[in-house]
Length: 115
Image 1 (spheres, one colour):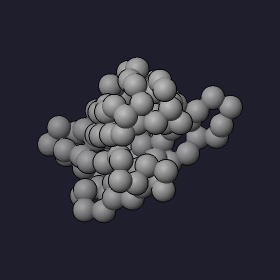
Image 2 (tube, helix red, strand yellow):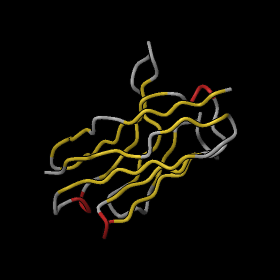
Image 3 (tube, helix red, strand yellow):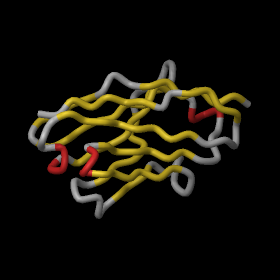
Image 4 (cartoon, helix red, strand yellow):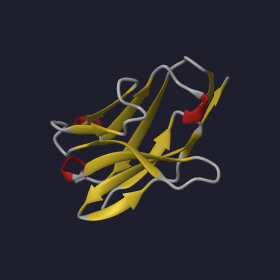
């Protein structure tokens, strides 16, 4: 079992950058695929990026390709989301999800991008 906890919330101007972190407790973190999701007001939760347990495979939503990068450090039980060239439409609560022997969600962290 793992428990993801997101950090890195912030308010940035359009064009700026922000890095989110997700630290997950539990000794089996390295066996979990991890993902970042987001939910904007009035919209459904959507996947932003995902990374395999080894870090060898990543995928991105079309809306963030070329701007966001997902990575992980299994020695630190942490997954990251580097967000560059932020747009107002990236404003949302960002959630971390662990998918493996069970599915576990973090509580989310707010990202606000001003125009």
